[in-house]
Amino acid sequence: MKCKKYEEKIILHLYGELGEKEGAELENHINECPECSRDFAYTKKVFKALDKSKEEIPEANWEKCWREIDAGAHKKSTLQKNFFLFPRWAYAGAALLLVFVLGAIIGRFLFFPGQRVSDEQALIPGSIQFTLQEYFEELKPVLVEYANYTSAEKREETIFMDKEIARNLLIQNILLRSIVAKTDPTLVQLLDDVDIVLKEISNLKKEDRQTPSLIRELIQEREILFKMEVLQKI
Amino acid sequence: MNEDAVIKLAQEGNREALKLLFEENKKKIFSLAYQYTKNAEDAEDILQEAFIKAYRSLHRFNIKNGNSFSPWLCRIGINCSIDHLRRNKIRKEKDMIVNNMENLTSYDADSNPENTSAQREIREKIDQTLNKLSGQQKIIFILRHYQQLTTGEIAEYLNCSEGSVKRQLFRAVSAMKVHLKGLILENKYEMQKI
Ligand SMILES: [Zn+2]
Image (tube, rainbow over all chains, first blue to last red; front, side, top):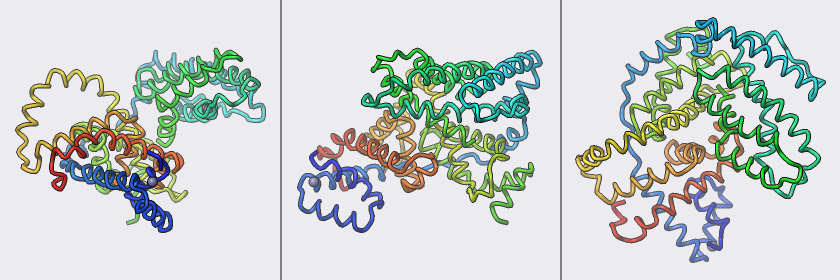
């Protein structure tokens, strides 16, 4: 297809998302360009087929759903439940948290000397969620950087810093992973994916041009940033 | 009673308030989950999971920032859908092999006269294509095409740029165009009926 930019515009136009001016411009082009005219006609057919095969949404058993929600909402979350009901686990978790907090304090001291960690918050077991959010905040910029990696960039100067940060994050990741190990499988999967990424970054070689691209693909493929984003909203 | 007041009550643990939020949002979340999983039971599970998760983190929902509840809940629903499908993927694939024969018969026994074989073939192709998309592309396509949200709204829901939503949407629709080509263009079936 020669008119690549119109291909995208045709789709947006069919969704009614092109402004008046852009829409008119597109229509003018379609009238003049047989190729785009064909593409427009075909895309319309595809839309029709999609609409036609849109499945009717069945009725759910709303009462049953509500009963489950009502019962589930007033139970303690699995995270908290596991923590309080299994003293041995809680003990191990608290010990790990302590190490984690120490790691975080040391980490912050090294890399963000201007910021102070609020340790009383981090030490409360119920605040694992909070700890997690904080961890994501630290993790995100590193991942974003690698998600947007292009080989043209000169990264040699920053690689040393990245490696240090990744190692620090890796410790936090391992600890968090063990704390949430038996709770939310989604979160565990996410932390496992992050684990691979951080290990790759920690082991980066200055002259290695290929691994950063692989890391980028990994972040994109596993949709790590997207998942973190959604988890942070919860 | 306005939504803010209901949310505030629900945040305080009021059961009726939560019920009200459920009634107002159940269809939206269920249809989203159904379009994503194509399975009513799974969609019910997702609906429940999303509400329980929402309730437990309701204290973190800030009314004052002018946030509205529905998109926030939808985001949770989206996340639950993606997770649910992934969690069940392996199980489903196993079931599929075992129940393959049963599925085929039930498909043939479909009593809907509208459901001609051409349409069924197209529908199957659409489902196959949807399942080939990445989780994010699939959800963006469903939100735009079936839930009729604008790309701007989707960007807000997923907390990413509108440009990125448009790119993913373009990829999803392009995939549909490629995969449906044989079925739609070959004039094998009467297009007017489709
Ligand atoms: Zn053209």
